[in-house]
Length: 245
Image 1 (cartoon, rainbow, N blue to C red):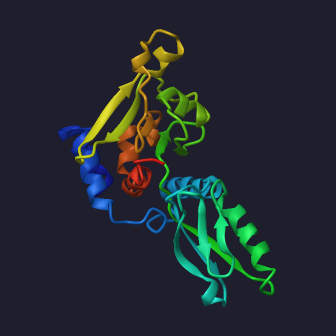
Image 2: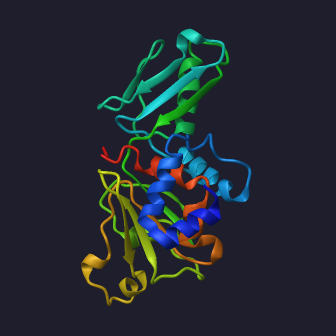
Image 3: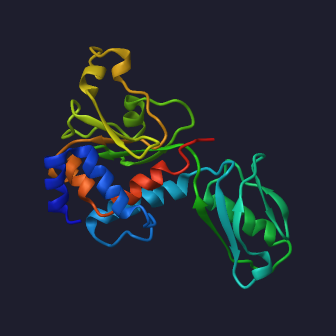
């Protein structure tokens, strides 16, 4: 689907229908694999990289541990147990909960060095099953947040650096996919919240899988973001594991 066709579809049939079409069209693509060097896709590539570098492992996450030239000590898929560990054929149970991927690579390299000469270790995050939300648009640090506690719209925006000067505080949108596959769009007037004029319920409590979009200039408007090739995969990535931990 081209960008112009999607925008026309959005205007004619509504945002929710356009979102469903885009998500279905792209749901089978992997988030990192489908990004390209274009400026638009680099947005998502940077978001994924930041997420992988800072994400802390927890129960039910799945990782791969690879040791170059040592197939017996390579584990292509290991699920983090409820107690926070994974099994490695040489090291036994290794506690990984709370560690980032770079930290785990350093830890595994050090531990394997006791048995192997200069081991070259890589770790891949295959599935991140924490409850996640996305924050996009005219925001200082667009990205993916892990919901370690209940979070409302204003808290998500604050955790993402706040709204840029050109952002529309009155027109913040929450995209929410229900369990039956239908999409909801919820409008939030953050300006009223900041001014203390909003009712408590107007500062919507977020659910795992929600994406907050702050409308802004042309390249950061809702319709433009929906038209990006990487948005469908981004939405699927954020929604994965939305049962939480």
